[in-house]
Amino acid sequence: MKKLLAFILCAVMVLSFAGCASFRPYSEIEADGKLIVATNATFPPYEFIDDNGDFAGIDIEIIEAVGEYLGLEVVIENMEFDSIITSVSTGKADIGIAGMTVTEDRLKNVDFSETYATGKQVIITSSESGIKGVADLAGKKVGVQTGTTGDIYASDDSSIGSVEQYNSGTEAVLALSQGKIDAVIIDNEPAKKYIEKYEGLVIIDEEYTFEEYAMCIAKGNDELTAKINEALKALEDKGTLKSIIDKYINADTDEK
Ligand code: ARG
Image 1 (cartoon, protein in one colour):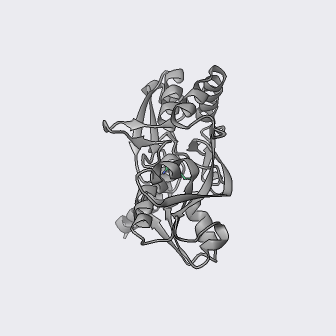
Image 2 (spheres, rainbow, N blue to C red; image 1 turned 135 degrees about the horizontal axis):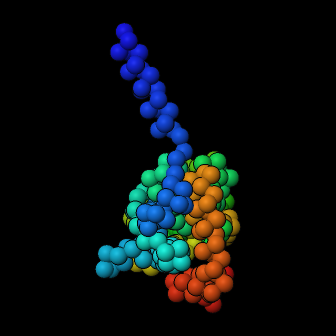
Image 3 (tube, rainbow, N blue to C red; image 1 turned 90 degrees about the vertical axis):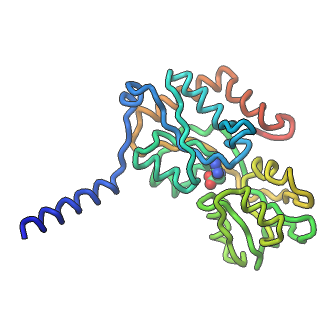
């Protein structure tokens, strides 16, 4: 009986710890010399795997520059987009950078750094679909990347026929090109990259939402958040942020 009670007590303790937020404070990260970064490298031009098999993109270069400023080695952990927040809030990764939009809901689970870029959700469809804007999505099959803001908006829009979730925008756009779905809701810059290799896919120029991208950090890891913001500010002042963004996004046609 005593053994059973002890076992139950242990199980309860383990379970309650598992649900707790935990993180490495900055002093610990500094002593280790490594910043563990969670991302989902399926999202060009923000993060993707280049032809040499290396991580590349705006977010990758920004976090590398932040690491350099702080004197930390950046270790990238590639995972599903909807695992990033859990990974950061349970302390498996110190920070997440993934073209991630700051939302009220996410703020319940993680803190965010200062905004370093902006985006918007757009609709990708085929030029023959007749879809000209959000209203035309009524009754249609819409593809999204699981757990993204595109997924959240589509799922909240009861006029949409069905929301099909994919592991990446690439897979959603592939399904669109094969006629399996009618449209994809996704961030504007990745949308441009995703359609590059397909003929007959178009981006509908109706702004769905305006969004701000920031890095997510475990709730209460204030020391780390302050260091990241200090680094971002320094990189902004030096013009590094702008030159990284300009390198990947045509500076004449886009705001950021
Ligand atoms: N901005 C959108 C969001 O926060 C999409 C981000 C997707 N990022 C990625 N690396 N797959 O939900």
